[in-house]
Length: 118
Image (cartoon, rainbow, N blue to C red; front, side):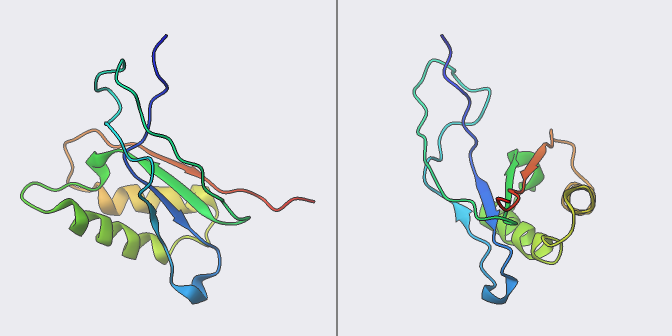
């Protein structure tokens, strides 16, 4: 049985933008999807508060040739901070358009936003 894929990085952007916190979840980072499925993958558990936004993305959305990955992550954080209160369909399209405009690498973005319990 193959191990479940793990994502390299995820971003949780809380709905309370007054805090200006848009952290990346560093725990559980492991091999990229598509690499040896027989190797064990780390996992982590975190709390997603209602209205927060969880982004799962491929490195193709962040990386640019000759640039440190941290710079791409900072660019993503800055761009998405202005959009994270938008509905997800409004949030995703400009994120991909802005961050992947000149990309030739594979790009994938999966977002999740928990609704409050009734």
